[in-house]
Image 1 (cartoon, one colour):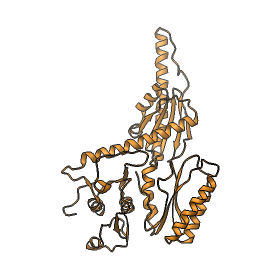
Image 2: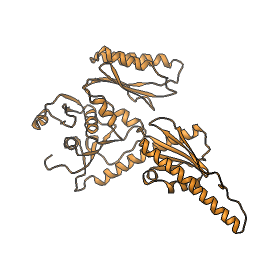
Image 3: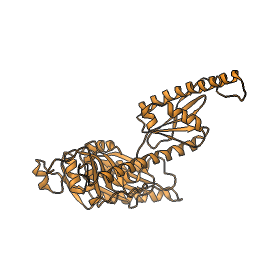
Image 4: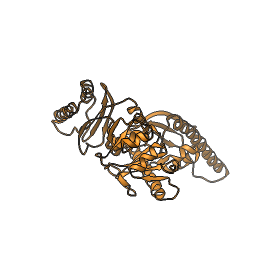
Length: 375
């Protein structure tokens, strides 16, 4: 998971208000119930010292927008009279909360929410294709129709050299049409930065397109079994499922990498708070792994430099850094990972429920390079 959005969120100093609300809209009194839940959350934040400008901004956000359909959750982050983050979650939070802290507490959101993934979708047949794009969490929208040559796209059943020649011309027409669609798909994949290409259509057309795609697009392609004529709702649901499957596959691959690297002499995997903190200080973390159930009562010291963090003030001072705040370990780890360009994979909990090798203290990391001796 790319944490760049978290880096942008924490560039300004806190404190931050982080609110997890039950945003379900599945009863007749849902609107009143939602208002009561926010009133309670606002009261909790005020007791912790949140400023009125931030509380008013959050209240404005809670009261605006379309209500959810059925069960849902919502997470909001605010500071300095601004709402910095407002996202709907697929389920209500297990434990609704409202916290005023030096760093936003975003681990529950990251564990439970599917990773944002952009996708390109193509419906292909012998005559051309329709290309769609879907931003993170959005439904597919049409971006281009590719109309190839419709001349001789259907074979005929007959014998003789003339009919054989006609069938070869049909095959050539299919190849040209497919090549044109593939060229446009490659272009859209590159332009959107998509992480997933979804191909719909009859099996023969799908297979022909995969063979014609460039290396990058072919490597991220998945096929849908339903026909190319599926309506928009069916296509959107199939794409959403394909995105979730791709995210789950990516997370599982990371867990397998960690399982293979843990305990090896090359030192490219570490676990436990102290070792992970050392890896973050060295900016050696490629991928941070955190158990969704990690104990938030465990706190670490942070500084103005996100990657300078430690379990004690003395450890920070020993490396020439002044400690600024003591914060829950998950928030500190995510901030440091985001600001050093590390990726993130949640372990356990949430809707994926993926669990790999046990990790000391519920945290681990895959490294870019081994830690220096004594780090």
